[in-house]
Image 1 (cartoon, one colour):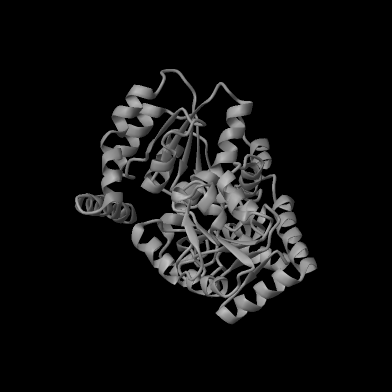
Image 2 (cartoon, rainbow, N blue to C red; image 1 turned 90 degrees about the horizontal axis):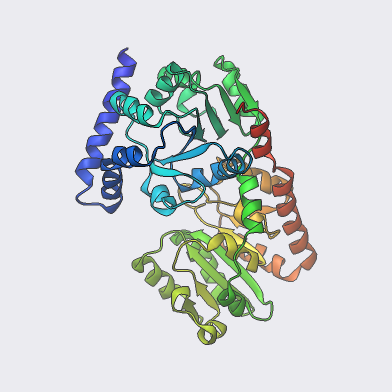
Amino acid sequence: MKVGLLYNLAIVLYDFAIHLAAPFSRKPRKMMKGHWVVYQLLRQQVEPGAKYIWFHAASLGEFEQGRPLIEKIRATHPTYKILLTFFSPSGYEVRKNYRGADIVCYLPFDKPRNVRKFLGITSPCMAFFIKYEFWKNYLDELRRRRIPVYSVSSIFRRDQIFFKWYGGTYRNVLKDFDCLFVQNEASKRYLAKLGISRVKVVGDTRFDRVLQIRSEAKALPLVERFKGDNRFTFVAGSSWGPDEDLFLEYFNTHPEMKLIIAPHVIDENHLVEIVSKLKRPYVRYTRADEQNVARADCLIIDCFGLLSSIYRYGEVAYIGGGFGVGIHNTLEAAVYGIPVIFGPKYQKFQEAVQLIETGGAYSINTYEELHALLDRLHTDTAFLQATGTHASRYVTDNSGATERVMEMINF
């Protein structure tokens, strides 16, 4: 009981902090506005008697992970309605008009009263929580109401709170799931040590998602015009300042290479910072036309939604974040059969570790390492092609998690 009270107190304090920050910060303010109308939205949109399958994703990345399963259910079981909730504005604001769901809204904070109210209105027939979502009160109440609940593409490591001496509350939450569909055998072993046996190793649905993205990739005439006569093109996705310091130094002294940068943070200050480091002609995508984009050596993507399609125009991809909190999505690039490069902080990302092991990716620590690697990739065609083939094969070999989950769900 005491642990439950501490958890609920932490949720209340978090809610209070968001309210305090809302007048001064855009992200908390958007979250609060979404929370204020969520019950009204649900009462207006929930169809009485309809069978809702509830998907919850923390943010945009987790949504993309769950998306193949959402769309598979939609295609094969059209009698069900889809309810999609987000915790973060970075997910909700981008996908609030997602046509694959019948209702999209924020998830109310995990307070007992909110939980009862939310489930009372929506009455889902089953629920899917994507990857790292473990909200105690929601999961406990779903179990009390005997509503099947599943964790999808979750992954467990020894350093997580479940395996700490003080992680009792979170360990108990894992018992609420009817099944945890995990990414690897190591996760299953860790859970077995806690006595959690309702576990199936199915892999990661992100592989299915990037294959789907590749098949639906947008044609981008301005990017094609920029690339021109198949010049060696280096695509840097989700880059941060420390990443840019390295590859921009190489780019500035290698006129045989073209560069496409899609920075992780797209604000004017960061874009000005990138431009200040460039010594070759550039153009921003939102200001590009057929004439100026053909004359540029660097194309700066200053808008969202294009990166996953842009990778196909590159000979080599660099994924940012490896000099900070950790790298971003490597699979979106690897699926196109091009070598992938990233910084040193990748160990917590299973796909990055395995891409290196299979020969489809390389990690660099210094400018000198990046210089040597890019020189080889540019001059050794066999090495370039073999590395790209390894990257692409890794993605296709690990696809199929969505189908494996579908086979184990009772609709």
